[in-house]
Image (cartoon, rainbow, N blue to C red; front, side, top):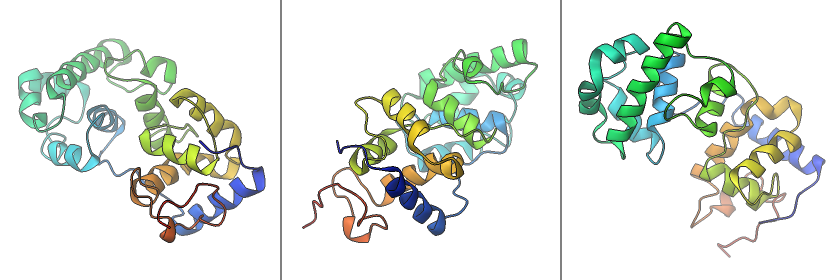
Length: 214
């Protein structure tokens, strides 16, 4: 874990991320607030590619909580059985859909407090939903963001919540909305866990992480 770097360095890092990709998008495929929530819930301990493959035929027939209930748990399992923990995820999605229909009029709530009460929806999933669909500057810290935030010194922290709160404090306001996407993409494709591609990194000269490729 690197030490916290200064504001001007953080600002320059995100300026470069923005210059490279001004409007980063989630790699999960979705059509509305509900399908995004389902996709993110399915993505826990699974790849976006795997989730997209499973939902390609699911979302055209079940893109609302009521349609998901009509499909039923058994029907849902047939679509998501290639995804890890698919039985528990299917159970949670059906329970979540029932609550959305009964308590929220079939709409996805736009507050973290409400979202995290739904089965299968933790703080990270709620933050993705709030950021991607509702355009709130939340930080959904996954393993990629946790690694990058610590390696770079942007937001060092011993656990996910500490990094999330540090990012909220440290990321300059103009870059907060897209910060978590830039960090995910950087961690997924450049600042990898085992073999970081430091030679190809656009913030290499600003990053205090020891280059393991030398």
